[in-house]
Length: 127
Image (cartoon, rainbow, N blue to C red; front, side):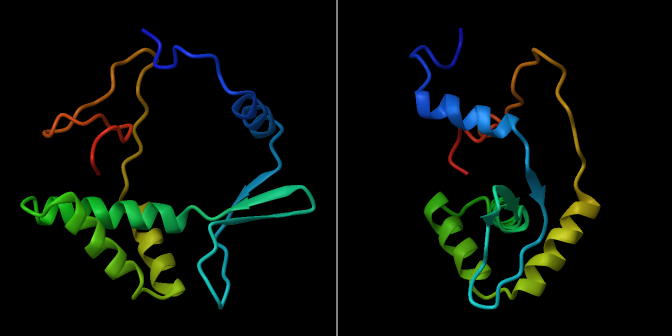
Protein backbone atom coordinates (compact mmCIF):
# COMPACT_ATOMS: atom_id res chain seq x y z
CA UNK A 1 0.00 0.00 0.00
CA UNK A 2 1.42 3.46 -0.85
CA UNK A 3 2.69 5.46 2.09
CA UNK A 4 0.92 8.63 0.86
CA UNK A 5 -2.80 8.11 0.48
CA UNK A 6 -3.57 11.85 0.30
CA UNK A 7 -2.81 13.93 -2.80
CA UNK A 8 0.64 15.50 -2.76
CA UNK A 9 0.87 19.09 -1.71
CA UNK A 10 1.28 21.45 -4.68
CA UNK A 11 4.25 22.94 -2.81
CA UNK A 12 5.91 19.50 -2.62
CA UNK A 13 5.26 18.95 -6.34
CA UNK A 14 7.02 22.24 -7.12
CA UNK A 15 9.93 21.31 -4.82
CA UNK A 16 10.35 17.97 -6.67
CA UNK A 17 10.21 19.79 -10.01
CA UNK A 18 12.88 22.24 -8.89
CA UNK A 19 15.06 19.38 -7.68
CA UNK A 20 14.75 17.92 -11.16
CA UNK A 21 16.05 21.18 -12.61
CA UNK A 22 19.43 20.45 -11.03
CA UNK A 23 21.78 23.39 -10.45
CA UNK A 24 22.95 21.77 -7.20
CA UNK A 25 26.49 21.46 -5.90
CA UNK A 26 27.61 19.43 -2.89
CA UNK A 27 30.59 21.01 -1.15
CA UNK A 28 31.92 21.78 2.30
CA UNK A 29 30.97 25.36 3.14
CA UNK A 30 33.14 27.35 5.55
CA UNK A 31 31.84 30.36 7.46
CA UNK A 32 33.71 31.84 10.43
CA UNK A 33 30.50 32.90 12.20
CA UNK A 34 28.35 29.76 11.93
CA UNK A 35 27.88 26.30 10.47
CA UNK A 36 26.25 26.57 7.06
CA UNK A 37 24.13 23.72 5.73
CA UNK A 38 23.54 25.39 2.38
CA UNK A 39 22.94 28.60 0.51
CA UNK A 40 21.75 29.87 -2.86
CA UNK A 41 23.72 32.12 -5.19
CA UNK A 42 22.59 33.17 -8.65
CA UNK A 43 19.90 30.48 -8.75
CA UNK A 44 22.41 27.74 -7.92
CA UNK A 45 22.06 25.80 -4.64
CA UNK A 46 25.15 24.77 -2.66
CA UNK A 47 24.67 22.01 -0.08
CA UNK A 48 27.03 21.08 2.74
CA UNK A 49 26.35 17.41 3.61
CA UNK A 50 28.96 17.23 6.36
CA UNK A 51 26.98 18.80 9.20
CA UNK A 52 23.92 16.54 8.90
CA UNK A 53 25.99 13.40 8.24
CA UNK A 54 28.33 14.06 11.18
CA UNK A 55 25.42 14.77 13.51
CA UNK A 56 23.59 11.58 12.50
CA UNK A 57 26.76 9.49 12.66
CA UNK A 58 27.69 10.72 16.15
CA UNK A 59 24.09 10.17 17.29
CA UNK A 60 24.03 6.56 16.05
CA UNK A 61 27.53 5.83 17.38
CA UNK A 62 26.36 6.99 20.82
CA UNK A 63 23.41 4.58 20.56
CA UNK A 64 25.84 1.78 19.69
CA UNK A 65 28.22 2.67 22.53
CA UNK A 66 25.50 3.32 25.13
CA UNK A 67 22.44 1.24 24.30
CA UNK A 68 21.08 1.95 27.76
CA UNK A 69 20.81 5.71 27.14
CA UNK A 70 17.41 7.17 26.32
CA UNK A 71 16.76 8.82 22.97
CA UNK A 72 16.53 12.22 24.67
CA UNK A 73 19.90 11.75 26.39
CA UNK A 74 21.59 10.58 23.18
CA UNK A 75 20.23 13.68 21.42
CA UNK A 76 21.48 15.86 24.28
CA UNK A 77 24.97 14.35 24.18
CA UNK A 78 25.08 14.60 20.38
CA UNK A 79 24.34 18.32 20.57
CA UNK A 80 26.88 18.70 23.39
CA UNK A 81 29.62 17.12 21.26
CA UNK A 82 28.74 18.94 18.04
CA UNK A 83 28.76 22.36 19.69
CA UNK A 84 32.33 21.75 20.80
CA UNK A 85 33.62 20.75 17.36
CA UNK A 86 35.35 23.24 15.11
CA UNK A 87 34.59 23.44 11.38
CA UNK A 88 37.91 21.70 10.77
CA UNK A 89 37.00 18.86 13.15
CA UNK A 90 33.60 18.41 11.50
CA UNK A 91 35.26 18.26 8.10
CA UNK A 92 37.86 15.78 9.39
CA UNK A 93 35.13 13.59 10.94
CA UNK A 94 33.14 13.73 7.68
CA UNK A 95 36.19 12.72 5.64
CA UNK A 96 36.85 9.78 7.97
CA UNK A 97 33.18 8.80 7.69
CA UNK A 98 33.49 8.93 3.88
CA UNK A 99 36.51 6.58 4.02
CA UNK A 100 34.77 4.07 6.24
CA UNK A 101 31.14 4.12 5.13
CA UNK A 102 29.87 1.19 3.09
CA UNK A 103 27.50 2.34 0.40
CA UNK A 104 24.70 -0.10 -0.15
CA UNK A 105 21.98 0.11 -2.72
CA UNK A 106 18.73 -1.73 -2.17
CA UNK A 107 17.24 -3.61 -5.08
CA UNK A 108 14.14 -1.98 -6.50
CA UNK A 109 11.06 -3.12 -4.64
CA UNK A 110 13.02 -4.54 -1.71
CA UNK A 111 11.51 -4.17 1.73
CA UNK A 112 13.15 -1.68 4.14
CA UNK A 113 15.86 -3.09 6.38
CA UNK A 114 14.93 -3.20 10.06
CA UNK A 115 17.43 -3.04 12.89
CA UNK A 116 17.23 -4.86 16.21
CA UNK A 117 14.84 -2.28 17.63
CA UNK A 118 12.41 -2.80 14.77
CA UNK A 119 12.99 0.59 13.18
CA UNK A 120 13.33 0.94 9.44
CA UNK A 121 16.53 2.21 7.91
CA UNK A 122 14.61 5.15 6.46
CA UNK A 123 14.49 6.87 9.85
CA UNK A 124 10.97 5.86 10.91
CA UNK A 125 12.20 5.10 14.39
CA UNK A 126 13.42 7.10 17.31
CA UNK A 127 16.97 7.78 16.26
